[in-house]
Image 1 (cartoon, rainbow over the protein chains, first blue to last red):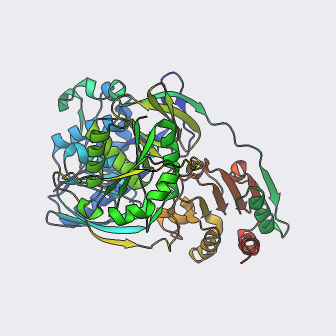
Image 2: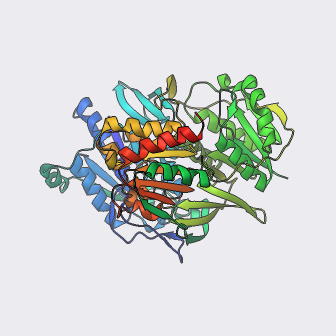
Length: 260
Length: 322
């Protein structure tokens, strides 16, 4: 079975993010990390591989400039077999639709039985990529999943909802996204880190995928940022020390704000 | 005026507040047209309320006819309604499922998707949305460059305004869903103990490292229930296994923007603040006077949550007269 995991290079989650007023795009020059949600997707894929046996492969795919290699290396160190890096200046400025379109091209070229995605990325936080991938690839989408089981070409999972969960089943090939409840991602072992250095990473251009430059990137985006501004600081605030009446004072505050 | 489609969230004959908020926003752009999935009886129960908040038309769809496939039938349905009514925008609630529907609809229609809008306006004939991004640190205005803008609206962004209308009610046909789809075989509700969903709740009570143990979350839940609130947790609390991951508020969890957010024993690391700092009113309780959460709090109490919270619960009960 061919499992493909989508991964993304994102700004460090402990740093503040801002938009460049000139380009109206996220400043991506600071420290970067593997999107934390993607670690759960990689772990889910590796656990499936462990169950299904050695003929199962886990390929990570990312759309990123050259330095995206660092997230690819981490995924390989965790245990993925190989990587596809769509690295093309034409991809810059893609919105979620352009990203999904280009990734779908790379995934289709590689071939797949199952695509595993994280819930969302920590920079754009749309959560829309997995569903859009399912649309572009023309296969079922089973999102927000946990407790995956594969039985032949049938996949069963629980889909988390705001009020509980659904038991969902789908045939393969399919696209799934996983929530943080699904597993505890492993840390790369020393052996894994060493092995990652010899695992194959294939760099692809848009031309390799037969994608016209006009179909992706900033120029093809179906959305445009008109302007941006930093949010003004929050207004007045009061901090008091609890003198045995802290709970009462909060209740007074809530009443003053008509929240109680 | 042009139609603005609103996908209605409803349960047990009642319309969710996020839907009323969307009707209010839709009214700023054109004529709100409510799309109700749930058959005639469900629609009849809520038509009047949808009209009170400005729906000029209510389009109903028989849920049984949509079948048990996941998400895809709703996408097909909205695509067919867009084709027949040519609206100037489609508004969908920014829940996990709502965003998925929006993203897939945008692919089908080759249209722009604008996620987590907190306001909408017309600029000439163009629909412009205001979004709060990077955990609320930045405000962005954006628009679609092609197709009908598909907009997901963050709950609690506006106050629903009454705008009485008498909606025409029409049933719309269910389009066929093409291709293989994931199928729902069983629905289990109730993990939240009957509490509102985290991303939609008007009030969120969240606990962090200061809660100290899994069993102490009972206190957080008790405060939440006294305010009809959802329960959230910091990453420290979910990583410690004290509360389910699904409740994690923050950049690596759920983003919330309720009317009131009460942070109990949460220090307020950047990644947590990114998930809650656009809440309208923030109250914090923490033992450490230096905790960054106090920089955001409209009202903060430096103290032990294990004594402050029980007192707060008692005061709420007293003032509610129960």
